[in-house]
Structure formats: structure tokens, C-alpha cells
Length: 160
Image 1 (cartoon, rainbow, N blue to C red):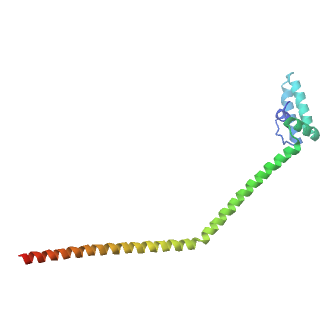
Image 2 (image 1 turned 90 degrees about the vertical axis):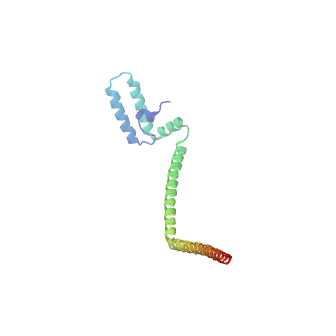
Image 3 (image 1 turned 30 degrees about the vertical axis):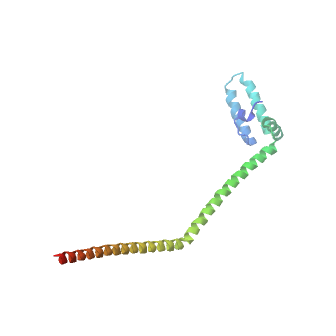
């Protein structure tokens, strides 16, 4: 079976006006060529235009050509449209969610700043404690050395 839509060069959802325009355009092109073999082609294009221009004949042609009723095809188109609506809704929900998370971050910014400040203070306090411990260890080591030096001095002076 010949595909009338391809023959006329129109999409399947073309209006009657677009079908008639495509037929005239194609007929003029083929008529000017003056090739006798194209007479059958012109007749086929005329039949395609007549079939696709009449809504009842077009419906029957589509059902025969594509294998399912126009109502089902329309349902498929509605489903695709609904899918596009759902996708748009999902994108909008994503944007709203992003805005809400940005607002939540802004609302919690003070808490996060307080936590960061507390963390910095704890780090500074721990650093001071480490420095103090290092100083005490050095002082203890120095006292041990001074005590050993004094003991050694006593031993040398008593022995001598």
C-alpha cells in the first residue's frame, strides 16, 4: 500500500489546507516535467489528496495503513502530551525544591556560622593546651638536666 503522506510530503497530522497545498505544489512540479510515465503518479497524488482531504476516508485509510483506530492514535498523542506535562511538572517541582533548599540553607546560616565559630574556638583552645603541655615537658626536662648537673658537681667536689 502506498504511503499517501510521503507521496504528498506532509506529516501525518497535516491539516486539510496543508494537504491541498502540498498536492498543488507536487502536481505543478510533475506536470511541468511533461513525462508521460508520471501520469500514473499524478493520478496517485490526486487519489492521495482526495483520500486525505475527506475526514471519513482519511480515518479509514489511517486505520488500514497504520493498523489501529484513530481513537487509539489520539490516545497515544494524549499520552505523549501528558508525559510532556508530567515532565514539565517534574522540572518545576525540582526548581521549587531547589529554592526551598536554598531558603533552608539561608535560614540555617546563622546556626552553621555559630557551629563554625565554636569549632574554631575549640581548635584554638586545643592548640593552646598543646603548646602549654610542650612547654611543661621542656621545663621538666630542663629541671632534670639541672638536677643531674648539680649532682655531678657535688660528686666532683666531694671526691676532690
